[in-house]
Length: 149
Image (tube, rainbow, N blue to C red):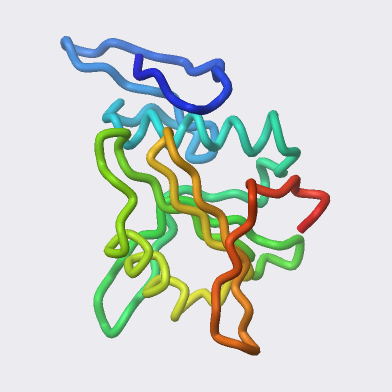
């Protein structure tokens, strides 16, 4: 298992034909355990168990259409009225968080128009609140508790 800058998580790991799989608590199925998936699963557990995010309002691999092309947001938090509130983009721990990664998540936000964007590689986490009046992103010192959104 990778060493990440996140609390440990009670991941369910399975070995099938020599390949490792992890149980995704949001999709309720086993998925291939890649480095990026390891980050996703740890971060989702952190949101749920550490910050109080409701399981029922989080979804992984959310499909959107962007300029006629199918894209997938890694994780989306929805409000209780099921409007998107937050997009989370994951990268493997060895992938640097670059402007290109921020460009990717802001393109997704053209469609979803959320209040918060998070980018993480499991080692470094960036969270920003979108200010639609000024057209800027305000970087927060940490990922907020669900109750503070």
